[in-house]
Image 1 (cartoon, rainbow, N blue to C red):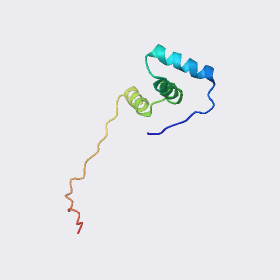
Image 2: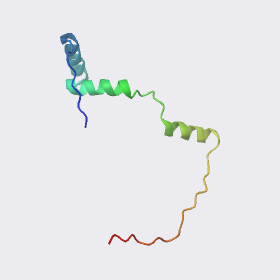
Image 3: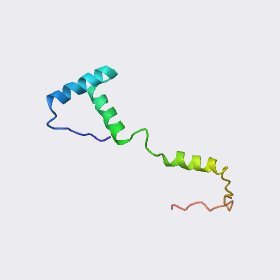
Image 4: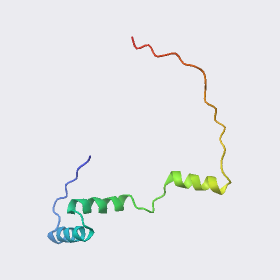
Length: 79
């Protein structure tokens, strides 16, 4: 997992982070992770799979006729 170091963080900002973390019942480090996560992956982001499923429902569903190839295969010779 990646690690990030933030240098020259003003004391007031660090205090505010500690207070905010305490209000949410978590460590300062966990609070910073939550803030970064919400900043770069907002809940309102477009989720492609959800959007495609919704489009499919709007057009009355989609039927795919996919047939699996039933041809037997030979085992791989690793020798």
